[in-house]
Image (cartoon, rainbow, N blue to C red):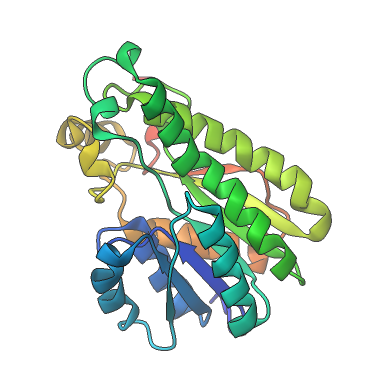
Length: 255
């Protein structure tokens, strides 16, 4: 059994009970980690707050990861409250709805910018904020998807953002390795999250995954959380710069 007692984790991207961040938070909390959970804005505060109360000892913080001042303020608050950090979970992705519909060739310049700013640059920004607090080393975990390397119709500009995210994971792993900070991505199969609902034909995507994956089913949030728990622990002490698939084996199939 993995024991994270004495470890402090900050989790970005909690929106509701369907969030992958929620599955990860439950697993980390169950292993004994002290949690700080971040929600995007005042509008999301109420729902996130209800979930935070389900995990005794967990603290909530507001942080819009597209705002450098809010990121700076957050990590100052985390330093004051906890002193150090051991684990960071980045479960953040967004692209404008209009850029997730229709043909990829019609991607707008602004949609491209927003998708990469919120979904990719934010990982770099929060990692930069966390690194000085990871005085005993640490684990940074983000979330990707198979569309980073293969064409998934309707995923459009978000696919490019995920490809960029996986590259960022490798570069951050190289930069932070001397500090014993590991950086990895989990490529999860499709899950009905708030963010995923913006992708066209999500139901068809999930049906195809369940039919073609070797395990003949889809993955759930707690299974992704289990892999995050492994990556957060000393069992993964030599694993960094990787993208680990948690998709019931779908990615190995040719057709």
